[in-house]
Amino acid sequence: MESTPLETPTESIFITDPKDLPKKAAKKQSKEKKRDAKLLRKAAGVIWEDTTLDEWPENDYRIFCGDLGNEVSDQILSNAFRKYPSFCKAKVVRDKVTGKSRGYGFVSLLKETCYIRAMREMNGKHVGNRPIRLKRSKWRDKCLVGGTSKTEAKFKKKALF
Image (cartoon, rainbow, N blue to C red):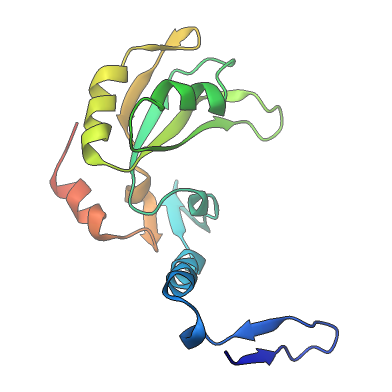
């Protein structure tokens, strides 16, 4: 395995040649390169680079959860949707200054069947002390560059809800 040292004399890190890496490591490196692509978003006439989308899976089915109470945390929202096998992540959006919930969040599911089941079963169910309102997340519609994928055309052509 060949490796070349970095140019800076203070660092002793070696970079390996991608051809010598095992297949899994090379696949991980290619996923990281995709994630390094800029994700430009547009809303209210303003364009910006969104780094928060890097936290989410690339080809997921995302649900917008509205009418959440202040007591609902990421863990409470996760526990409500954990019964679906393809559940991946849940996040409650919070105010940057006060840290209070802004009243909505997002849930990520990896399979379409679980997404449809969750939309039907969980809409109107109590999470915390309020019934939640579910909608299809429209985050892909606001992406200009980097957010386009094969599933984007599927979302636009096929309205699930």
